[in-house]
Image 1: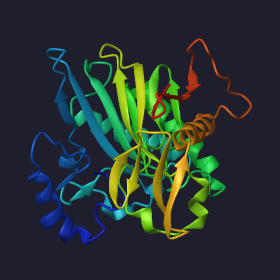
Image 2 (image 1 turned 90 degrees about the vertical axis):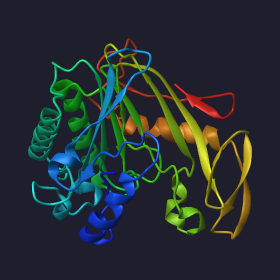
Image 3 (image 1 turned 135 degrees about the vertical axis):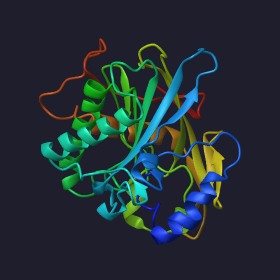
Image 4 (image 1 turned 30 degrees about the vertical axis):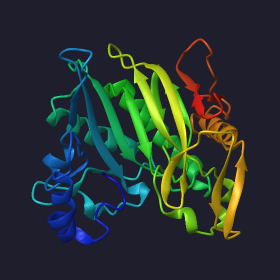
Length: 304
């Protein structure tokens, strides 16, 4: 819940309506990243792993100023809000962000290497559209640096990034998965005629991630492609499907959309992992860094 819309209607509405509504969610839902104080916003969700007695998956959620979040939304000991990191625009900012994240882990008794459970960090960072502005190339350098330090210094097992309205790239760093942008699953953009967005793939996806419970390394990754159809979420289950095209004000047939999604994500993966630039190489033996590469399986399930 740590994102750039959580307090859109002001802090009073956030405290009197948003938080109470989330507290009444049925089932085993866990809300992370926001709260009536910094301690509550920093509190990790803790889920027991049924097939591994005594083991848990922990998740914390943070946000960044570079995703459009006002610094005033930062939670304190006396103020509601979320964990807000500085804009990741310099080595100094990255260092400060790592320090704040370490503090969040400390208050949850999740400091590494004394933690025996899996740890997922959810982060709202970066722009809505990858590389639309020239400064995103530089911004991605700092986001990647922060993600690598999370793994190297804080023992994070999965970096779950979001903010981009399309799926960005993914990197396998020292066996740990970094999702730089999970894209939108459900949105209301179906009726928007914004031609500048045409360069980006409009499919979303469910991310099914299997981690080794012993060391947090990626075992398997599956993306299940989805799309919005008259404001309803639908799974792509065949090679072609019809969707609403706001630029033409009618439905159109999309063919090979999943293949195009794979190609787009693979292209972003090389860019986001910094592997399209001199000085970094792909180690096919599973070394420091690999760009995740997807392929289509059964026509609608994209897997590495």
